[in-house]
Amino acid sequence: MPLKYKDVIPINSDKIIYVYFISDGTAIKIGKTDNPKGRLQSLQVGNPRELFLLGTSPLLTEEEVHTLFKNIRIRGEWFEYQQTIVDYCQNNKTKHYELSIKPQKELIQMILDLEGKCSAR
Image: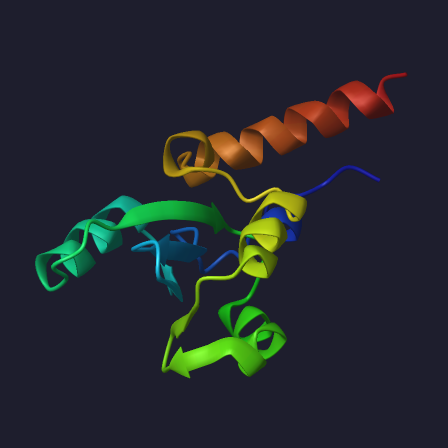
């Protein structure tokens, strides 16, 4: 059965919400945004240490990730910088900003094209 637009992204959604992992090398902030690069820039203004985007994902929910790492929470959305979070980003195929941000319609079209190629076989 072919995929439909609503099966990929909710009809009322016009932006992809990403769970982001931003770090200063000592802690990791796990939050959500539709613009990870912009969020990184806004957080940098109030942080004396250089921040970097460890990864992003449009597939994970912020609440699930917070629950998963609740034992290493420092405060709010900030977590201890531990290899477990870095590994989690890598194992769940989160990607650096430049590789992960694509316009929503482009993502949907890629999925629909792929589905069309698979069903044509």
